[in-house]
Length: 314
Image (cartoon, rainbow, N blue to C red; front, side, top):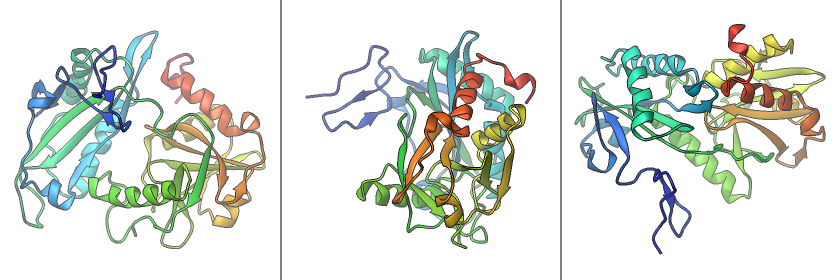
């Protein structure tokens, strides 16, 4: 039995419950033009395909009372540009124009709530030298919370985050996510919902696609920058803490501190804010509804949906 399109025709699930991200009517933005996704092509000799040298972003659009709003879109495209610059990928585009075209992309696909994926990738280049010519593609699809809306069972992964002396860990580069795929696959095979990776010193780093915060004695703690991706949602959580007068500390966090915390949560553009129930065999006994994470979860949802305009302050 073939998959059935949704009422908006954006994606469907086949018999194996695999998600399809586009259909015959889906439009993408490719190198300055809007084209049908099914007609777009890429080159099999591209450096990005063979070696993983591409930069991308994950961005969310929300339907608010002020129409569709793409949350922190400027920050995301600035990080995309910075990621490219760090690994010597050319970035010849104007971000203001890309932002305008991203909103147009949503209109063309009749999307209100959406996940948006811009990616910069190399033209044919089978060498190990940074490319001279690149392409940009922006696509979008409807997508719920990446990690769901229930409290998560998390395991500490046997895979570490890449050593910051081996790459630019603050760049959102496609090849880095082999590490995330390994960690997530291992966690799922063991019966967990998600993996938590440590850094090269065996201290807490981040999830496979999200940053982590822990709560202890009325304060929030999160790993300091240096071994992790500088998440835009992570920064938003810190901003919200300042607005809500919640103390937040960026520091090195040991596994012992992690497991001795009162509660914990992941945050990311795809995941949004999602609570953690267990780390390995350790159960966080504080009720999620009593945690600071729950307060942040509600504040974040109010912010992105423009129910409360914290951004006047942050």
